Length: 204
Image (cartoon, rainbow, N blue to C red; front, side, top):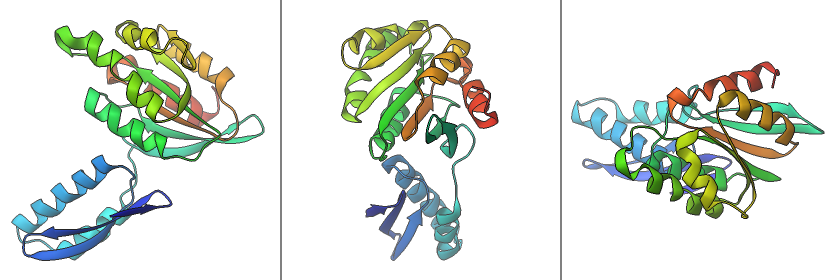
């Protein structure tokens, strides 16, 4: 397996056959998804070659990996839209993807993760390590439940904690600069899709 220009080139054994294919979406979690798709296709006797070609053409969906650029002071910035939902595993996976991006700065807009039960505080605080490992220098943390992460990141970068998506949008408009790579991710109920929509429309 190797990665170049955002795509991942994979050689895998599926059943009794060896197949080389390209995943258009970056990240090990997408490789796992692709392998699961190929296993399902093989199980029903489908065309593995056609499935492999389809994976190479599969772009990110809105809220689930879509990428676009927006105007920023002096140039443009990359936005990675993962706003549809979040849990500890998907947060770590997409932070690793952000860490592989070549940007002047890596920025996160992270909404709280909901429905985590009694361990919510520890799950949120534990995200500090992958955030720092990804080389994230600045970020906006959104929602009451994400407070433990804000505490864990104190003094480790330019991070702000805000109450809601509207405040996040306002903060991002002053933070964003040319060359930045921005990951936007959180539980759907936080409403970060509105931040993405404002960026797409140029009204941030």
